[in-house]
Image (cartoon, rainbow, N blue to C red):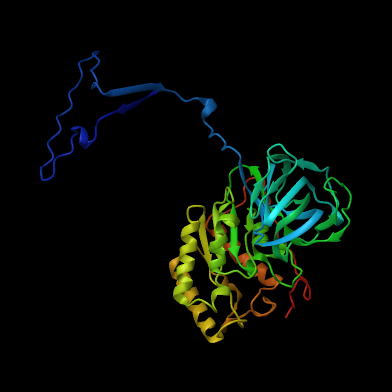
Length: 432
């Protein structure tokens, strides 16, 4: 026998219901009366009867959520560089799987004219492993953008897997947004128009992020992280670096969820807050933010200033994402200011972070020497401030541990990858 659904309207206190007035004892409810056999009893006039409701076998499974564009690759590109007509072919790792992609480009401190863009799976030595697919912008092959503009492409049907390497080739001239350090080895530049060339691009090796800011991937809605920080997060190790070795990318590979990188070398809280709209808040589909910032402020801000600016940053991010806040790494020296004050304020700031933010990632705890909070564990740093490749792996392992314990896991069909092995003497790891 099917169930009946019954909704009774107008039963709250404001509608003369049974709730007593303040100070009055509740009145006794009348005893129920038995209906006369075979005689249906009338219902109150404001009763809505819906039914009968019977199980529908075709609707017993929840409907899948609509696909969503979320970032699979990102760089902040704070700086500017001008170029004559050049083709760049950037080799970028992808942290999200899906069936369509959307590219976003950023201009620098002047006009940028982009005339053609293609995307393909990346092959060796700047070649393409698949046929190049043309990217359009409002149906056109390219665009012209004024200074400091972000331009998104039309969606492109393109199947991409987790940690695939894509080759994005674009013909461009003018002022392009660019990173401060090399982060994309395996990329090339060549004067002229070669975006559709399937073989090796030739030209010269080019490892800085330039022009291409973001690649969104359309797939099932999932957790998507952005890492916010300075050169430690961007991945500075040796001057010839690789975003794949920075802790966000290493953690991404092990977790199986995107952790795109918005780190900018040299910045502190002020710079991050000034550029937050373009570099972070412009991202669509972000669910979580990991913040490792403040090292560059230790010589210029007192502890009150550090706390105020971190609180401001978290407040601005909270409508976009769930903030995760990290303690600052050991700092064995300072290039500016009084090192005694830097040491004191770093410890005070870390103590405040631990007691203030519930979503804590304590990266100091896994990188400091047991007997000296100001020193890195041997082998985890390259200059007393920046972690080595091994240091990034240790940091990533802690990020993975904390996020996994909080329930973050790879989506169905995504296979997390192990961290790469490090060889003593390579990748900035001295093997001490």
